[in-house]
Image 1 (cartoon, protein in one colour):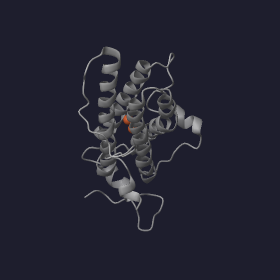
Image 2 (cartoon, rainbow, N blue to C red):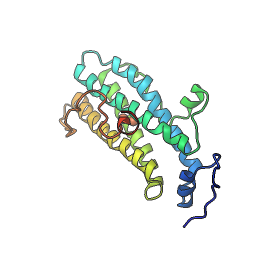
Image 3 (tube, rainbow, N blue to C red):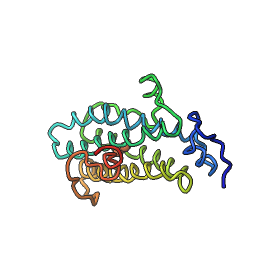
Image 4 (cartoon, rainbow, N blue to C red):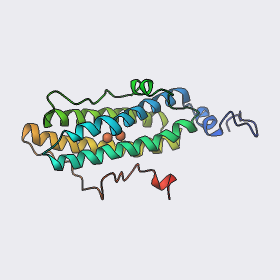
Length: 202
Ligand SMILES: [Fe+2]
Ligand SMILES: [Fe+2]
């Protein structure tokens, strides 16, 4: 049994952190990774994906797919923020600083904003997310079951998002059929793995 460092009644330390540190998790590094990933999800859903989606006029079916990916990134943001605080971390008290720490490059509207350019950007953004969340899974597997569970829920959806945009880009750019293999979500923003309603909201 790990040594107990948190004294009874102590509100300055956390047993939830003590136990994962005892298992070898570098908690400070994990908090940094989660803040970087949260920044990427935040910027993506509320800003970059919103702009990119608006510029897919005439491709209403693509807009629907983009909307699912965008709203699921919002679920990712809301799912992971509480974990940062539970671990003793916090969001930067400065939006610009927060944005600049994002773990993925800003998905700015490409020039020209053609459908192929937008889909390429969306695809690469999903790929960055897969890499970032996989790194969190690797760091926490077998050591921090809560962070692992949250990160793997998000990863499930990022992998689906990559498949969606591979399908659309292959069709638009190469005239090829590369099916994503996925069925339609129940409604926009379904987020079957990451919606935190099941955890926090009635
Ligand atoms: Fe995401
Ligand atoms: Fe995504």
